[in-house]
Image (cartoon, rainbow, N blue to C red):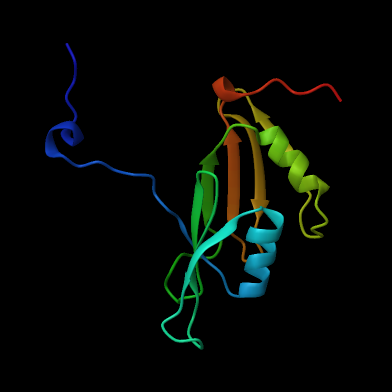
Length: 140
């Protein structure tokens, strides 16, 4: 007997959520999200040139909104993102000359292998590779 979910009968289809993170300095945000994490700017919006920025950055399936607007996001938020290839991401990030971060890998039998970075505004991004998605470590 198959179960029918409310979504299956209502026509509602949820898509991936997009976190909104509060930022206070565009140059620092670009250095971290574009330079360090390797994201690209998808679009930027300001009502006028002197008003706060609201922008979307992405890398692969990771999509984030960054906002200078008061009330958008809360400094110190946490974004949990699942991915494959956390070891490769770790190697990429530790090879970069970004003086504020040298993240380590954390292993947990239940949730997998994770890497946490903190942006200049106190927001944490936790990249996690679940145990079933894990690639074998390369011989070094």
